[in-house]
Length: 249
Image (cartoon, rainbow, N blue to C red; front, side):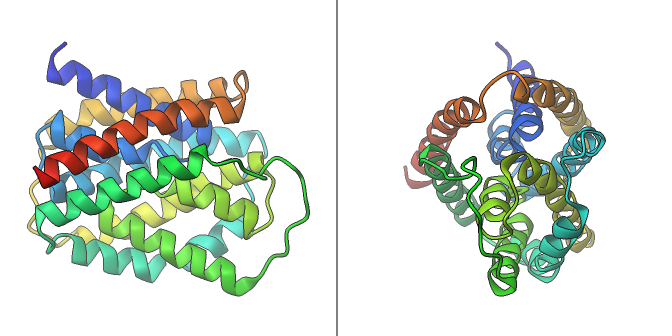
């Protein structure tokens, strides 16, 4: 299978995860853009933000029609991450490629471990909502989005459940709003950077991701969220291990 075809498959899988899980798929976008499309880590992070913004906005529209987006909570959560996302976007273009790759691999591994851990998200238990914790979670998510070019849905969904007190389906839909807003801010911060992106190569990846997000939303209605998370988490661990080995060796 050629690298171009693999990139299309990876793009579709990225969109599938975003549509089904409300995040996580963007963690696959960066390594796919580096190893399959041939972009530098900095360029891959910028291109990933474009892919994530378009794909998340597409998936968000579907979740909004289903009534699973909590607009007020999502905007407040994203607002806490605006400044960190902008700063992360500016700093990222100035970091060494090896550092970006290594940091991304660590984030991917943490995301996979988080997905494999038992969650109380579907228990329906009451959660005490604290403004300080919501702000800290939103700021951390914004910083990760800006610096590494990931939407951060793997952080947003559990934070919206355990910190903001949303139920799982509402957290998935609302996380797409948070991801879209954070990614737009991070992209704006990178607008003046000297990073060169081959958009002709990225466009098919983005198109596959958008198509995948539509299928992901339908898949979420048929397959248990826990099953989807486990499958994706193991794939993510493999990607993280490969990137760490590539950075160290």
